[in-house]
Length: 149
Ligand code: RB5
Image (tube, rainbow, N blue to C red; front, side):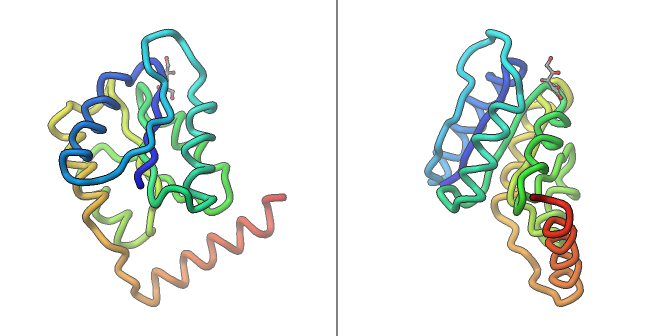
């Protein structure tokens, strides 16, 4: 199950991504928002992040105008590794190296075709499982344990 959320700046790209990944066979939980009425992106980042942290969804996709606000908010949740990507190289590397579990995109920044390619690479690329990357992820978890309540 893939959790998807956006703010008012990214409803069009959210709908396009949902249609695309459903076509590819993924189940989707759509947390909104659903129209161009102004909303606050942390509210949607929170819902998607929590669904991933709780294990209700396997991965999350968050979209706002830039993708930056969503990524900042999602990364405040313990266990979330949200990667803000505007290219496929980063999307592949963040899965292989960082085991990112949430992708953040910017509708005002990244064109639809590239955004769909980024989503595909993000969903299709496994974590490498290499020891050096596991060690670094363990250090991130240690930082969380030391600094999050
Ligand atoms: C909304 O205007 C905009 O600030 C938001 O979509 C996002 O880009 C924030 O990071």
